[in-house]
Image (cartoon, rainbow, N blue to C red):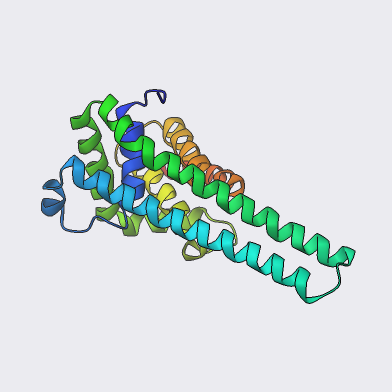
Length: 212
């Protein structure tokens, strides 16, 4: 049995996975029940699994074709090994997503369902209402980088963390740590380090503004 997660941690995960699936006004969002959120989250994870496996298959095919087309020189072998390594990493990501898909309903069953639903919707609604302000703050905190160039999953993690820090009165340290944990599950090592750095700059920026 997976370890029990706290309701808000599950809610953050649900919110992250349902941003692209759940649409509507604040009133319409209020009508969403927990089952709808779970289905939307599983749909997102399923699409990601499919994309990862398709990419892994393409890498393996490219590697095989390269070996067949030319003599097996050291350069070709090294290139092929790199492709296979990429394919294995993509497959690993797909397996991790599959694990998340299987575990998500059980995590929610073990948690207080009302709290999970309420905080999931609160996060989605807050990011929706404050999106422009959140994006401006994030852009001001990025160094030589454009927000639109960041992967969607990383953008959504950043937006949720800023919403918690600024509008939902979650302690900055908690919001940052939770964002990093989400990134470890749904991004990569470079992604979670990047998110950690950006959020710490957001914290510094907000702190400096409050002192003026």
